[in-house]
Amino acid sequence: MSDQGIEEKQGILIIDDDPEIGRTLSDILNLEGYHPIVALTGKEGIAKVKNEDISLALIDLKLPDMPGIDVLKEIKKISPKIEIIILTGYASLESAIDAINLGVFSYIQKPYDAKELIMNIKRALEKRKIETLYDEKEIFQSLIERSPLGVSIIDKNNCYKYINPKFIEMFGYTLKDIPTGKEWFKKAYPDSEYRKEVISTWINDLKNAKHGEARPRTFTVKCKDGSKKVIYFRPVTIGEGYQFVTYEDITERKKAEEEYMKQLKSLIKIGNEMRMNLELEKLLQNICETITKNLGWRQVILSLRDYEKGTSQPFAVAGYDEKKAQEILSSPPVPIEATKRFLRDEFKISESYYIDHTHWGEMKKYPGELIITPAKNSKPDGWNEKDVLLIPIQSSEKILGFISPDNPVDGERPTLRKIQALEIFANQAAIAIENARLYAELRDERNRIEFYIDLMGHDINNLNQGVIGYLELLLLMHD
Image (cartoon, rainbow, N blue to C red):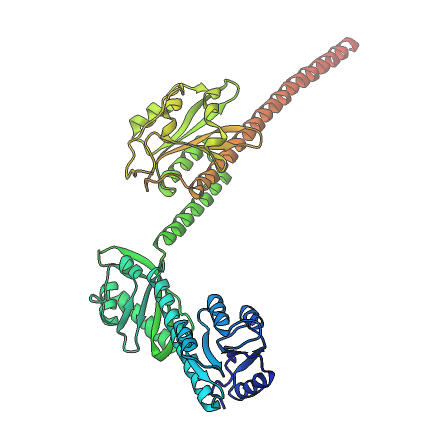
């Protein structure tokens, strides 16, 4: 009886035109724990290969519809990994040579010995298993070698047995630098207190580790070049106490999360300031300063439109020295129409407009001064000092103005996420402007009402005095 236990039975295809042989072989294979599949013709056998999971085929050379050698060729075309054993009552040197050249595992002459046949089947399947494992190993190693994650394999004695190219790229350490965990902990965590914390966590996780279960952790690692990276670790215990560990660099993600939290806090702060009824000028100035402090821009200009005059003019700035700031704020207004040529779909990202330096010839037609600030950390495909980004301050009815940030700290072109963050602050500016307008209208209305009440009060007093005087005169006349 086979020792395959509860494992899935391997399919063995029997291609023989003698039904009795098919039944006999099926009985033998069933007893050995295999799954026999019978075909009485070559074409039927080829169809079975296409539709069923088959590990090995037993083929008779003499079939009613086609030669067994041709069947062998077709099967190898369909599934090269299937092992083949030839069973024939018409053995010849020529057919044996052909079969061997086509990659058959063995060539057995009928009548065959059942034990010999089973032995050949087991050897053929063992060969297939080894080749499959080797192929899987090759695939696995290839995947690890090209993995976007760092990978290491550590044995039960805490010795590093393997690190992939991404690991070396990520940290700079090779197996010579970190042959064991001791060297890794010392180099990756030079601060003794932090190292103790990491080691303690690693040991406790190992004590409670279950086979195949990931134990994710996040630590800050010092690389060989002295830089620090925030790394997401996923150690998994595999066979014989080995640890399979993947390393993901989440430094930029953490920075983005921190930036997001800064932006969120800034929004809350501005919202609180709006509820405190701060003056519009101060509130818009705070928005500009928040953009330079927390959104990654070195300079920003906020302009507002005056629809009664049909002009636009800078109202608040941040990131410039005092002289330049005053120069910008005192610049003459420009016609609203002058900005319309830039509000085109070809420049649109989200609800904003990014006009890169390749359109500088057109931008020079703008009647107002175009502030050019030398770009720091400039990159070939990054932000250019002649790029312009316009974030509309939009009410429900019209554009109230624009926020125009300049000189990004990272030197990159604006991404959708960065633009959308700016748009949130532009919305806050729009709310503040609308609130200020409504407040001004309410204040003017209140003043008008107070004026009319005061006027009416004077008129009533005059009337009362007239009536009283007339009554006094009548009394004197009566006396």
